[in-house]
Structure formats: structure tokens, C-alpha cells
Image (cartoon, rainbow, N blue to C red):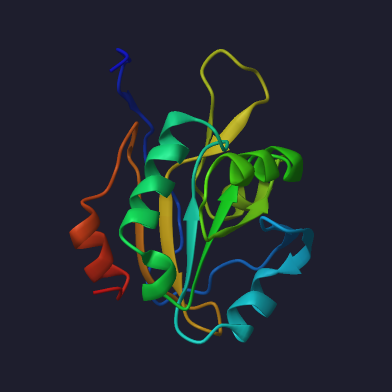
Length: 171
């Protein structure tokens, strides 16, 4: 395993359970195509909770670790819809999906503005003007009300997935 320093990210100002999750429009990328989609439309069309999963750029070890874990735990069968949000472009996401067999779709947010609207963006050390989302999970109902949330405090930081599943209602 490579050596790296743990970086404290400081406080996040994310929506808590009971709050409305910010709406946004971004390209929603699947293994077949992509198209602009609003979160509100996606949540409204989904039976059961919509789980937003924020990860760093696709292909990073953090993103790959999270998505491998969710696929192994069959989250696609346990939530209404699980969808990623990443600072990658649609082309980068498509390559990521081609290289892996994840049953999930991803919102492409290269500007990282969605993460900023959720209060979970952080600047990358030594890269002026470059930011990415923290690892974060939000379970939303069909009106985008946050039902459960977990947000990383450190880089890298991963949840206790058993506890997270309980928090998000995926038991």
C-alpha cells in the first residue's frame, strides 16, 4: 500500500437530515450514454431513496475503493437509485465505467460547483484553483429532503459501511 499523509479537511457545511438538498443540472453519465439531468427529476422518478455519493475524480484510489465497496455490497439493489457525483468530465467517467463493471450512473461536475453547493468541496494541496469533493453520502427522498448523511473529515477517510447503511436506511 502506498504511503501518504492523512490530511484534516476541516469542517464541512453540508445539508443535514431534514434539510433540502440543493438541486442542480449536470450531465448524467451511464455506460451507454450521457444527457443533462436535474437532481430533482432523478429523485422524483426514483422509487425509494436516491443516494448521492460524492467521490474525488474517477480513477483515483479513493473513488475506486468506494465504488468497489458499494458494488460488492449490492447498493444498486438496496436503494431506489445510487448515483455518483465527481469532478471528472463525462469522457473520464465513461472510461471509468468501461474499465469497471459498476451498475451506477454518475453526474459529471468538472467545475466542482455541485460539491461547493453542498459545502463539501476542498482545495487540492499545491494546485491553485483545483478542488474536488470530499467523500460524502446523502440519502434523499423524492422531494430532495436529506434523510441521512455522512461526510469525510479527513483525506482519506472512509465510513464504517455497516453504520452508513443504517444511517442511509439501506439495511
